Image 1 (cartoon, rainbow, N blue to C red):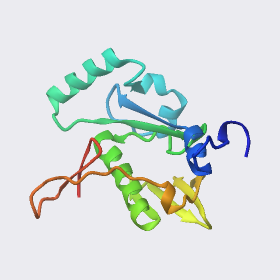
Image 2: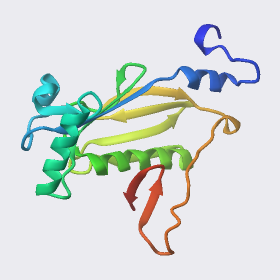
Image 3: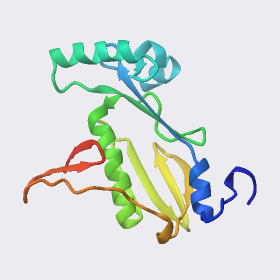
Length: 181
């Protein structure tokens, strides 16, 4: 290996690769009412969706306004790219809070078993993260993207923390995301 992936002194090849791997997550909230055609959203995302990082002030006002009317509202989309390749169906609008938690659960199951899977909260859109022939693939809506070669156990680290919840509780904290299981 050479270039950006070249391992520094004391660094594994896997660590060098991880240093250059780019996952680009973007959270977008829905501006208007319900959307029935994801193709329209994908064709004109700026009309339907608001990027919470690019338009932080406007997004915060919209979020607070919607949550005052419906405290459970969190409609929007997630745009997830890996090395520039789209990983999720862009334009699919769903419950953002639940979708982020589902994606965390997919990664958690993958780390435990080598395969994680979910559907979007309110739609039959499957998302799968799995190992196939020592390569890791992320699949959604029939599109498959290779995201990693399989790491060796010694090069992976997971910083999950226990929930600290009482026995029998169905609430688990994973990083900073609340997920009901």
